Image (cartoon, rainbow, N blue to C red; front, side, top):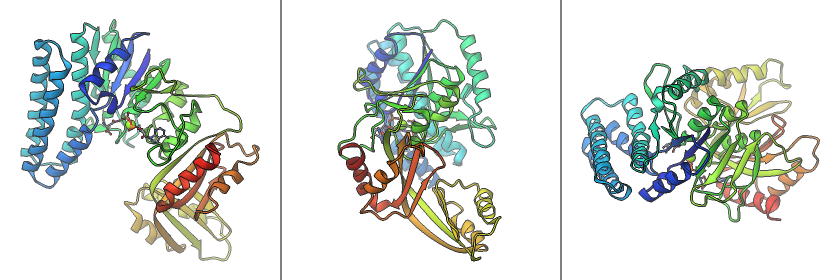
Length: 439
Ligand code: ADP
Ligand code: ASP
Ligand code: MG
């Protein structure tokens, strides 16, 4: 069974939904299909929640009304028969009345999670109804019945495996199984989600749980490009990536993939293929276990980074110093991305600054602390095994005119990272493309 995930743009209009239905019923059935909310919907649900947090039910109701009208229009365009139009309109009426009910109750983060879940609940219902209207043997499986995170907010793969197995056993003989991306329950059974962009993660978790033959991520671009196409001119698709390379690119900012979605596919050894819904015959990118020796594949950038330099108060770095420093970050549940050490100190970067003040106060017991905000990690990815000569000088050459605060290499043989100012990001990414890929 293949797992096919379609992102927001891919299901962004009635016509796109019809195109998706053609793609998923084309061959190799049965397929497990994971859908995002229609593009823009999750942002609108966030907007509704913001009004409710600010105790502005009128503002929320206006946005709900506008969204409802949009969906009624989609229904008009999607279905051919009155029966399915009416069925879906009835479903939408219930959904939007449900959203309106939140304007009358106390609003907390629990209610927000429920509101954010409705985008995927609506899109999967609409597509399932369309497939039923077309006579396809389709069933909608609620992700809330099998996607779960544990007490550390990490996906509970054993539970997911068991529950999705039960669902498939209870519903054999369907050609298409549809489910929602992004949404799940937490360890306490409450509605939750896998963070923004999380539908990719859902697809990879299901693919790993089912040991599926392939996980396909269908989106609006022809695979992973060698640099961020939103920032840089002349980027090219990369046809093949090793799991580790894709994982590094996703984690360090390649928006085409959710930051941690490659991990489950990598552990299960299930290949991931990135494909373009707007151009289905384009080859896209395959992510698997193969290495192309000595090749630099792509560059990605992660914004909103804070760097912290700690200079030891002793002349030489005493043993135990690094442990104490790292324990402080651990105690505030703050992950470190880059690390660089010298005889007298250590520099680290973080992206979660919720506890920055407390972290700095604790670090000051061990030395002088300097902080830089609005920094950006640029990560160059490929087969960067230390015995391959020349890639470090090539990468450094690209940045010859840009101030670099930190460099990190050696933690992985697939990544060399540079910390620059966020203001220099565009210049730095373009310089990498010009030097590494377009020279
Ligand atoms: P979806 O809604 O299908 O999940 P996303 O918007 O999350 O789609 O991801 C696709 C977008 O990612 C592309 O349109 C592109 O602008 C952006 N993107 C950023 N970096 C890359 C990259 N290196 N390669 C391809 N796309 C990228
Ligand atoms: N709909 C969610 C979002 O917009 C999840 C996803 O599209 O992957 O973040
Ligand atoms: Mg996405």
